[in-house]
Image 1: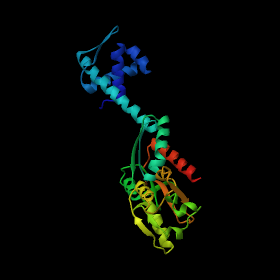
Image 2: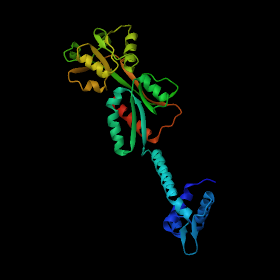
Image 3: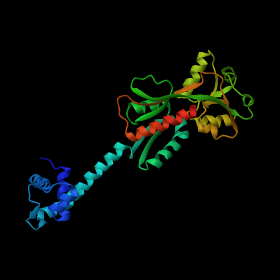
Image 4: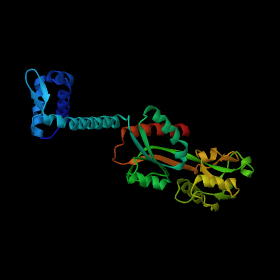
Length: 299
């Protein structure tokens, strides 16, 4: 026979009130039911816990020794229940997400702030990595959700949201492209380009667009990070191609952004989870907010 929460709660209530009648009232039990619980507890621990007669209830020496131990156990068990219920109703928990750096810098700060207004106990574990690593982290269950780029055809994933991120050309204000309203693929092929490194989702889209047009771009530099690409453009090394949502672009007053007049310069994006895995309620809330925010940007 194992110790259970009801029996421990009954013992503590009788010890605190000094009365089976008052303890039964506190616990919303009949007095006979409470007596059964106390007897069961005494059988489990193998010792009498209360001396009682028609007038008085008092702890035995063994009962006095056990009271602080069982009070702590009761508090710990009740706290476990509180924490479990908070996880179940979404009022607590940790959102574990892997995300493309573009969105980690532009979308996540506001989303995290907004969620913490309604769920102050929300925690966040954020990995800002390239698309291939997003997929790996989700597959290995190091995160629960991933915001990734490129086509997501892997059967290991469930796609929670899909959309697109349009790419733009970024150049200095003094560049000849700055006087154009739109830039075509043939224009991009005529100038040195600063392209993010292979393995990034943006580079995959750019390479596919040029390959489809049977055109070879002139690549001046291949940095890993968008911030580095922007710095190289600012230094006059070439034109870069980045997502329109990139915060690195928005923060550069000396650069201009021009739309690319070619439907191939669009990066698919997807919010994914591992197939067959259940998301925590708090993460479900975050997924809904994130999908809504991405949809607003696309609209």
